[in-house]
Every structure is written in C-alpha cells, then in structure tokens.
Length: 420
Image (cartoon, rainbow, N blue to C red; front, side, top):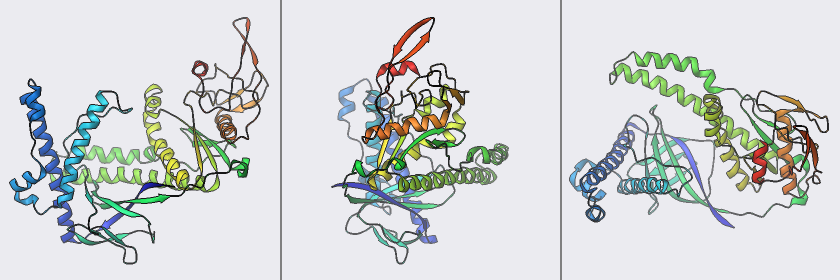
C-alpha cells in the first residue's frame, strides 16, 4: 500500500475569450519568472564581493510585482507563486549540480521565451480544478469550464495541481496531477511461466530484438521526415528574422518537429503497453545513450530511437500493473557472452552481426543472443535460472588461462567490465 502520482494530459479547445486569458496568464508567469531571474543576476553582480550583503538581500515577491504592474493582477495568483517557486528550484538544482549532489549536471537558469512554448502551473484549492468526463470539460482557476477531447471516461484519485501549456504550434494542453493509492499485492515467482519472461536488446535498426529474434514494426521517424524538415528550414533561413513570413516558416518547422515527436510517443506508448500486458518479467539493459551517441558518432540514430523514454514508460507501467522490470548492469556483456556455455568473446566487433562460439561451436545472431542472455538474468532473479557455468579455458597469447563468467547476475563485478 502506498501513494503514486499520475498525470492526466489532454488537449484543450478554449473559446476566444478563454484563449486570451490563457495567453495573458502564460505571459504574466513568464514575465514574472524573467524579472525575478534578472533581479537575482543584477544583485549578484552588485554584491558578489560582499557575501554578507548578498545573502541578506531581500528579493521582491510576486505580491510586490503585482502591485507594481497592474496587468499582473488579472493573472491567477497561485500560478505566479508557483513561478517564483520554480525559479527557486532551478537555482537549487544548479548549485546542487555544482556540488556534485545530482547525477545530472543542471545548467544556470535561463530566461523564458515566448514562442518556444510556454506553461504555467496552478494548485487546487476549494475545488477550483474539476473534471467532468460526461461533458468532456475541465474547470480551471479564473478560466472556468474548458472543453477537451479524450477517449478516457474516468480517472480516479485526488487532484493536486494542473499545468497548462501552449505548444510552439499554438495548441493548448492541460496536465492534471492525481494522487492515487497504489495496491501492490506482490508477484508469486512460482506462478510465472518461462514464456512470460522477456529479454530486450536495444537495436538501432529494429528498436529492440527479443530472445526469439523478434522485433517491433519500427521506422526511423526523423530520417523519414528529414528531407521535408530540411526544405522547411531552408525556406525559413531565407526569411528576415522577426518578420511575418519568418514566423510562418518557423511554424511549419515546428509542425514537422511536433509530428515526429507525436508519432514517436504513440509508438513507444503502444509498444510498452503491449509488452506489459503479455509479460510478467521484462529485462532491459542499462544504457548511457548520450555516451553511446558521442562515442560511436551515431547521435542522430540513437536520439531518434527515444529508447530512454520507452524504458521510463516500462518502469511506471510495470509498477502500476504489478509486473517486474529488471535493468541489467551496464557492464554486462550481453552481446559478447554465449548464452549456452558462458564464453565471452572479447574480440567481437560492432560490425560482427553473427559469430561462432569457439568453446561450444554454437552459431549466434548478435542481437538474439543478447536477448537470450537478458532473459537468463530474469529467470535467475525469479529462481528459475540455469545452473552456474563451469570454468572455460581460453588460449590467449600461447598460454592457457582459466576464467569463470557468471551470466545470470544483474550486478556484474568490476572485473567483467574488462571483458567488454
């Protein structure tokens, strides 16, 4: 028993009057954030040599800004307050990143731009945020009831907050945050059949390859739309920046990027849902996609996959459906290890798609073999794994050397990293 937060995101269809208010509120939150950031930068420049005065300086609050600027009084007060909190969190993340307290290094807070895409967050108080699925309408503070479109007929939980956003193409969305009770009954390992354990090896060409050599119907979306995108960007570059024609051309570029993102998201959402429904245990690799894209010079192909988002979807979907997701250690040589005898082929190159095991003679498809090794990890974790491999003798540089490779282990020892 526990609590979990889930978001319900839908597209809004506001009237012209509601659209004007949303634009005004988005502009007020963006202006407040930028003015507060500008004030902090200027104060630091002024008192950077006097730390005492810098720490004792009292910055203006959103209330003082509302008194100074009359047009801010029409905005939702909760959204302005949360904009100030968002700036504080951005500074905290920046300083924690400098201190090494975050795995991801956050950059210095940036000024928000109007045409990149704006958003504001508001809190729920006195039922000012409500959902009516029968009428397909949502109530937002100071806006009232706005129409939306979605196939879902219900969403349980306690509403905590709502985030209204406007995309670079001019579409409006709202993401409502719900707090739900999560009932985890646990998984009985004895009831899991071997056919319900799945190992997925990431593939740049096929998205992933499972233990049976099967792959989803994946298409490289960015590569597909790249010629159209190049043409739109070329036309945009010939326009005078800031002119009406430049904004029209910029809108066309944004539409293409949005199409690619939506198609990729639709593919990963449907695929992750299908995998969770069909399997009890799913095993994936722990990959550093950013490092892979830089080291192998395959940035465009790696980023086009959206594989990290796919794994993130598997994480919360397996949790909510009482399933198991296992992430193998990133140093585990899934492609180089024979799934039959445990031999590790250190000489295997990235271009070698098939290879024969020198120890047992088994012919391996690189990706299919990796999928089977990942499945073996899942079987081992639920107590249905294969027995330990016996030591394998390898002839290296004219001498014999014994080594033992334990394939069915989620966390490999550091010595295994030398075999990759």
